Length: 350
Image: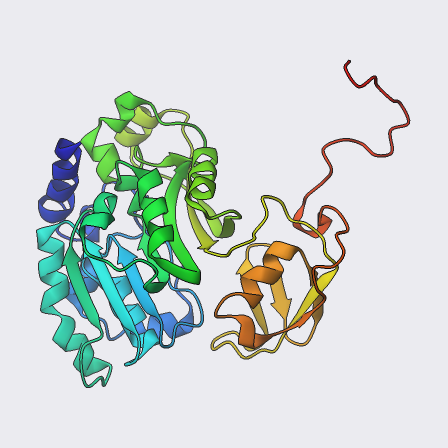
């Protein structure tokens, strides 16, 4: 295991000097960031941006005043974006195990503090392995939000990373992260290829294994925010991976008591007030829940809780309670696993 850690540190600390040195596009963002993120990126130090190796956007809405943890923070790009958005009263902690990346991040703390007009820095970086978060002295239940950008695929014990993240979050907190996933389990042979691992491909989880890991950690109802297929665009690497298909996916996982394994219908509804900064007309909870301002929308019990028991509560009006259960909530795609309209009846033991 330590050999694999050393390979990752060697790859991201010495072999890669900038994003131009990547051998595939797996660790590259696919879509342009929204306007308010781009405006912050315009004042992020160039050296920090040049050593960025992420695959998605890990900056959700409604960050002011939050305490944020970034797993695998690298040169600090996402940490400094989040620093601007949480403001002087919030905090951002980055964890990374690569000395060269930490040097860049720490070197530019004062630069960004001044650029953001803060009286004191609200960002710090800790050297550490995200597989071993329990060794870093981080307080249980301290963080409102945990982010990570194309790093968990590099971890050896992904189940432990997710379980530790759950432990470190406050009740109602959220893990919001982008990573690479595979359509099947990646073979040990490919996992032992240092270039494929460093390029975020051979360490990618099979998507169904990830869902099970997340649920085992306590994140009962993982929600996809956005997903995109990855085209490797390197003939040598494509020949190695064969028929494997890879995807960049952003997930949000909430630490909320009482979430159910399926979307259940309790006759509840919500109405968005239009008050989340950057989302005046509508708000996307995930890739299939878009809440338009002023429109009353029926929701399952889990979606109701994801809005009512989190930092988003003040931005919604809530209707209904938990008194009556109406079965599966079909608005989330759930269906009873047998045909209720089928008149044929089978014996109980047949």
